[in-house]
Amino acid sequence: MNIEDANDFKRVVSFFWGESNAELVPLNEQSVSAVMEALEAAGVCSEAMDLVPRPHNPIVKPAFSYAIKQIKRIAKELTFGSSGTYMNCRNMVALKYRTRISEIVNGLY
Image (cartoon, rainbow, N blue to C red; front, side):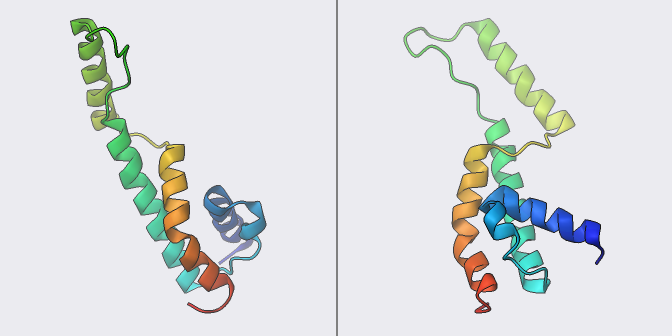
Protein backbone atom coordinates (compact mmCIF):
# COMPACT_ATOMS: atom_id res chain seq x y z
CA MET A 1 0.00 0.00 0.00
CA ASN A 2 1.25 3.44 -0.84
CA ILE A 3 0.00 6.91 0.04
CA GLU A 4 -2.07 7.15 -3.15
CA ASP A 5 -3.86 3.88 -2.29
CA ALA A 6 -4.60 5.15 1.21
CA ASN A 7 -5.94 8.44 -0.16
CA ASP A 8 -8.17 6.62 -2.66
CA PHE A 9 -9.48 4.41 0.14
CA LYS A 10 -10.25 7.46 2.30
CA ARG A 11 -11.96 9.17 -0.65
CA VAL A 12 -14.31 6.19 -1.10
CA VAL A 13 -15.02 5.95 2.64
CA SER A 14 -15.74 9.68 2.64
CA PHE A 15 -18.13 9.25 -0.31
CA PHE A 16 -20.28 6.79 1.64
CA TRP A 17 -19.83 7.76 5.31
CA GLY A 18 -18.49 11.32 5.34
CA GLU A 19 -15.09 12.93 5.76
CA SER A 20 -15.12 12.61 9.53
CA ASN A 21 -15.23 8.82 9.22
CA ALA A 22 -12.62 8.66 6.47
CA GLU A 23 -9.86 9.33 8.99
CA LEU A 24 -11.26 6.85 11.51
CA VAL A 25 -11.60 3.77 9.29
CA PRO A 26 -8.34 1.81 9.33
CA LEU A 27 -6.92 0.54 6.07
CA ASN A 28 -6.92 -3.21 6.69
CA GLU A 29 -8.31 -6.39 5.15
CA GLN A 30 -11.69 -6.12 6.90
CA SER A 31 -12.28 -2.50 5.97
CA VAL A 32 -11.19 -3.02 2.37
CA SER A 33 -13.55 -6.00 2.12
CA ALA A 34 -16.45 -3.96 3.53
CA VAL A 35 -15.77 -1.03 1.19
CA MET A 36 -15.56 -3.36 -1.83
CA GLU A 37 -18.90 -4.93 -0.90
CA ALA A 38 -20.39 -1.44 -0.55
CA LEU A 39 -19.05 -0.40 -3.96
CA GLU A 40 -20.44 -3.55 -5.58
CA ALA A 41 -23.85 -3.01 -3.96
CA ALA A 42 -23.91 0.62 -5.12
CA GLY A 43 -22.99 -0.47 -8.64
CA VAL A 44 -25.75 -3.07 -8.78
CA CYS A 45 -28.26 -0.53 -7.48
CA SER A 46 -27.14 2.14 -9.97
CA GLU A 47 -27.32 -0.29 -12.88
CA ALA A 48 -30.89 -1.13 -11.90
CA MET A 49 -31.77 2.57 -11.58
CA ASP A 50 -30.48 3.18 -15.12
CA LEU A 51 -33.12 0.78 -16.42
CA VAL A 52 -36.05 2.64 -14.86
CA PRO A 53 -37.89 4.99 -17.25
CA ARG A 54 -37.79 8.63 -16.22
CA PRO A 55 -40.99 10.20 -14.87
CA HIS A 56 -43.52 11.78 -17.15
CA ASN A 57 -46.62 13.88 -16.60
CA PRO A 58 -48.95 11.67 -14.50
CA ILE A 59 -52.07 13.29 -15.96
CA VAL A 60 -51.26 12.64 -19.60
CA LYS A 61 -50.45 9.23 -21.04
CA PRO A 62 -46.84 9.29 -22.28
CA ALA A 63 -46.51 9.90 -25.99
CA PHE A 64 -45.04 7.31 -28.28
CA SER A 65 -42.03 9.58 -28.88
CA TYR A 66 -41.41 9.81 -25.11
CA ALA A 67 -41.51 6.02 -24.81
CA ILE A 68 -39.08 5.64 -27.71
CA LYS A 69 -36.75 8.23 -26.16
CA GLN A 70 -36.74 6.32 -22.86
CA ILE A 71 -36.13 3.00 -24.59
CA LYS A 72 -33.21 4.53 -26.52
CA ARG A 73 -31.74 5.95 -23.30
CA ILE A 74 -32.00 2.59 -21.55
CA ALA A 75 -30.50 0.78 -24.56
CA LYS A 76 -27.60 3.24 -24.54
CA GLU A 77 -27.02 2.58 -20.83
CA LEU A 78 -27.02 -1.16 -21.51
CA THR A 79 -24.60 -0.77 -24.40
CA PHE A 80 -22.11 1.70 -22.98
CA GLY A 81 -22.60 1.28 -19.25
CA SER A 82 -22.64 3.98 -16.66
CA SER A 83 -19.97 4.99 -14.18
CA GLY A 84 -22.23 7.09 -11.98
CA THR A 85 -23.68 6.17 -8.62
CA TYR A 86 -27.13 7.45 -7.74
CA MET A 87 -27.50 9.27 -4.43
CA ASN A 88 -30.35 6.91 -3.50
CA CYS A 89 -28.00 3.98 -4.00
CA ARG A 90 -25.18 5.64 -2.10
CA ASN A 91 -27.48 6.41 0.83
CA MET A 92 -28.88 2.87 0.89
CA VAL A 93 -25.41 1.33 0.84
CA ALA A 94 -24.10 3.74 3.48
CA LEU A 95 -26.97 2.79 5.77
CA LYS A 96 -26.61 -0.94 5.08
CA TYR A 97 -22.87 -1.01 5.88
CA ARG A 98 -22.81 1.65 8.63
CA THR A 99 -22.83 -0.86 11.49
CA ARG A 100 -20.06 -2.95 9.97
CA ILE A 101 -17.88 0.12 9.40
CA SER A 102 -18.52 1.25 13.00
CA GLU A 103 -17.51 -2.19 14.26
CA ILE A 104 -14.30 -2.02 12.20
CA VAL A 105 -13.51 1.46 13.56
CA ASN A 106 -14.03 0.21 17.12
CA GLY A 107 -12.02 -2.98 16.56
CA LEU A 108 -15.03 -5.26 17.00
CA TYR A 109 -15.04 -6.81 13.55
